[in-house]
Length: 197
Image (cartoon, rainbow, N blue to C red; front, top):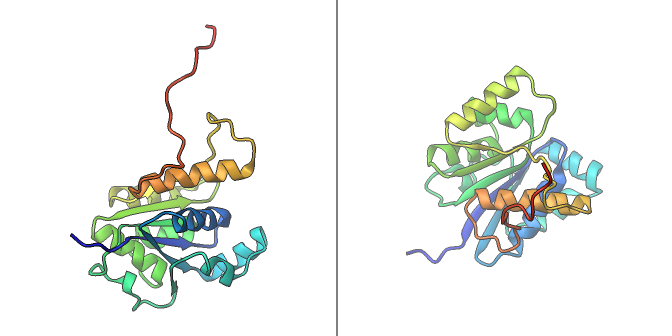
């Protein structure tokens, strides 16, 4: 058995919701035995600054390993490099389309393609609303190939008090979906009492 860390690729693309990728990096970075590999699209750099006031280097500082999106020769572009999953947080519709159609012209799309061909966990936190028919067909195609389409929709049953709590809950679900143990995630224990009929 290998003693290597669990390698999780985190890609941040140009859709709104850069906070999900940043929070995911923070949570995984604090998880023992996990090694994060970060890829940022060019548009993600703009979104990080617009939404969070962060520079590229701020996000890169949260990862163990950083890859350039144009580096198609990176380790994570090969199925022979052992990884355990990938989360695209957030996933733009452009990235979704590239994955759905096998257009591996950048490292985000190529690494996602590797996840699918090697039957590894791929989670796409797609961000757009409303969806048009092309979006829906691309999501169907990725699902049929074994990917997990996971729009970062907030839940309210745990009664979040802040935006941060909503983001953290969604990130916890993404961590679950790549198959990592996650002691931080709240677990549903059933309804606590019943409402009057």
